[in-house]
Image (cartoon, rainbow, N blue to C red):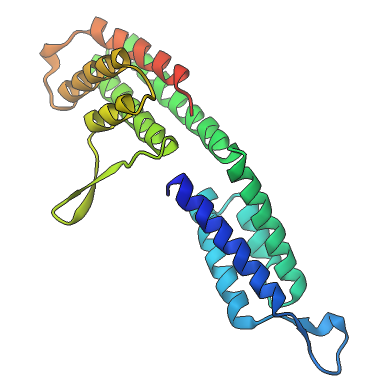
Length: 225
C-alpha cells in the first residue's frame, strides 16, 4: 500500500466512524446507557477498520488487538473508542512514525541475514553468502521504493508482476534517492548475486563477495528506512 493510499484510507475510516456516531439514538423507555448507533454502518466500520489495521500492522499489534477487543457492538461508547484508535493511527502516519517503526523492524531482520552471510563467508562458503547478501539488498531496494512511493510492480500481459531489482535500482537513482555511483555499485552487486544464484561460481572470487558484503552493509546503513 502506498503512503497516499494509506492516508486516504485512514481518513475515510475516521469519517465513517464519525458518521456512525452521528446515528446515535436512545431506545424509547431506556436511559442513555440503552443508546445505540446504526448497526449496519457500525459493522461496516468494524470490519473495514480491522482489515486495514491487519494489513498495516498485523494481528499482533496493540492497535489491532485493542480495536478487536473494545469495538464490538453498536453502543456509542464502542464507536468513540474506534474514533480514538483510528485518530491515533492517523497521527502515526502523518508524523512518519509508521515507517520509522517498520524501518527498525526491517533493520533487525536485515542484520540477522547479513550476520548469517558474514558467518558463511568466514567459513569459506562464498556462494550462499553472495546469494543471501544480494537478496537482502534487493528487499532493501523494494522497501526504499515503498518509502519513496515508487511502484514495485510492472504490468505485463494485463497482469502485475514484481519489478526486477535492476529496474528498482534505476528508478531509485533516477528519483534522486541515491547517486549514480551507488547505482553502478548496486548493479555490480546484483550481477554477482545472479551469477551465484545460477551456479556460475567460477566467475567471481571470495574477495569480491567480501567487498560486496561490506558495500551492501554500508549502503543499507546509509539509506536506512
